[in-house]
Length: 610
View 1 (tube, one colour):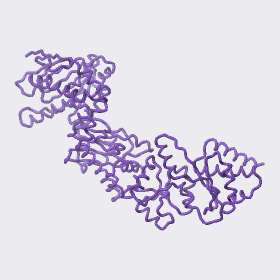
View 2 (cartoon, rainbow, N blue to C red):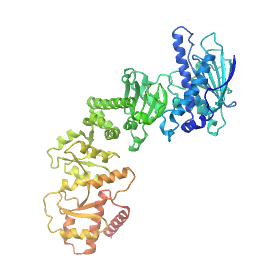
View 3 (cartoon, rainbow, N blue to C red):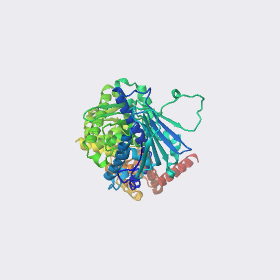
View 4 (cartoon, rainbow, N blue to C red):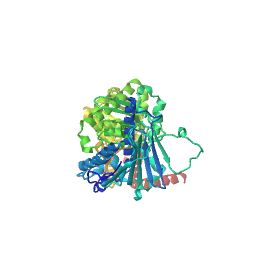
């Protein structure tokens, strides 16, 4: 039994072309070979269940590296192949599958972004990293002889009788001398690739290095530990999983030792087959929202992270795993965008998330409120990105107020329906900079909600457009409306003109009002539209010019005295100080003015101690 021949298709020019799709992830060769080994084991389980072959004591896959020989060997004790099967599956199907792959995507201009997971290359992917590949295989059919096959990935191959004694297959890859492949013969690199792509495959995978003495004399296979978890938590029913198992799985997958807030166990058989677990992580700051990761699997084989064509974009703020066995992964992103299957997956996941949030709110509102600081940015982003999601969760969107109470929009309206400005919802966008305004609101039994994350400028506009009659106003834009009362403003025209002239270089307008509080000499108010635009521009790292209005309080004694003061220098000094103090309270005092403000304070201290 010996044969030499040419593969029935021309492969000589395919390798460099396909490399353009795989330049950044050649490591998938190991995933493809191990996946083939899994298939071989699965097939042997089937024939053994029918009594056609004896089942081994344990199914396993071995990955062995040999630094000296520069080889990586993947072995299984699966179904194996006969001589004719090697000719069919290796010489024809494996290579023609690569050709099909090439023909399908050869016209893509940006292929690295087009192809999901690169499934479909299969066996041919070994030649991405190998200068020679050998196969030793023996069929489960006892009468069949073992088979040896080798090829350098061009158009030729050799076949002869092999040496394998038991059913199964060995793939021996002689790693080529390319610089980027030199680490492939190291155990740590193989462990890294297996951990990424094969971490949850259903057959135990063992990794070892040939030619290296073991630490313990007489160490046997019972002391070995597989590198993979063959029963990932998402395969179990939710009712059979404990909270500690969910937390442990979260730590295992995401290397995050901060406990998740809560999780959602996904299970769907119709109209699509889907399993998974989504975690809501605890945020330490709002920029953690950029660190979400949803891992996509196909039959427990890792495919990619954050595939937004399959997973709703707003869910990418979360962490989780989703296994879609039926997803056609060797297709383009543009296909998935228009594919009804992936749309059904996204719709199901979105529904499960909204159902979980509603169930949590109804069963334990207080706990939901505690979670809100961490989950509100996710909920708001979901509303902005998907109208259906907003429709499902709009009644459980809550607003935290300056008294640390939580309300839905409807509840907040009821609380404020007796107040003068009942149609306006005042909000705080910066707790630190607007602290003075918060204190004033509290002193006058007024309320405001806190909307201070990076999405809130967009979100409050969204809420206004979806709730006619609802209007939001920043606390520093509405402070005058809250504090203004009928009082004497006559006789203050000159002081208004004086401030306007004095501050003409500051781009500030001046108003005179009788405010309820006599403790405040002046306040800064901002234009609501400009405030929103500034917050939006800041989100994108851009500057937006804004103007301010200085409101002088005629009820304050300093303002009253200033109106009749004759010493122009003293009057100017006090006026500048009032302006700077108001800007400081609003968190808007610029660097140059801050330096001058501190200088004036020191001068005042010196005068008082002289």
